[in-house]
Image 1 (cartoon, rainbow, N blue to C red):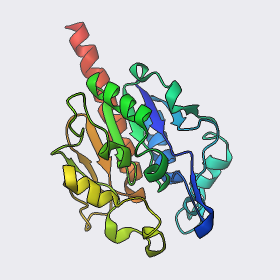
Image 2 (image 1 turned 180 degrees about the horizontal axis):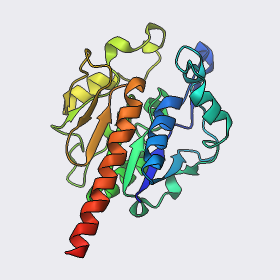
Image 3 (image 1 turned 120 degrees about the vertical axis):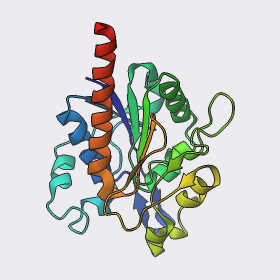
Length: 234
């Protein structure tokens, strides 16, 4: 049983442009369901703690046609999060960054989150992010001052999928920033797409890749536990 930290945006609002965003429902709930099915435990953290703002679009029929994620959201299971500053990184075997445009605003440059990512990575844990979730990974540097993603194969939400109405409101292009330090790919012909950049770095392309992303992370953690048990028995 691994312990996993899920990190979400607290939310972002641009009143002048009537723009509200936050974390994307499917990108939290699909991986959490997969992780819990494998017996792993998931804790939630946000910059501000408390109840984070979900991107309202992610709960609409267009993106959640069966209402599955809306029902999970309304159950309140994502209402209580701890502030990132209070997270004890050494207690976690993995961390995954939930997507949604909010991640680009309050997670990308969050220094305490960068520190958590480095500690878990240095301890041999898994760093995972889906859709816009790689935003903070872009700006995370290791103890040698080099990007944690440097030279690795990665994916994330591509430029050509960004809605035209929000492009001018975003602080940066995720794809452009990833390309500066890593080998970016989005496999446009693949319905779902995830990438292992190393044994410790996993990224997923978009909301539709969330379930595959979660299952892959869950299975990887289970394999690690089994391998550790076998080494112990030997």
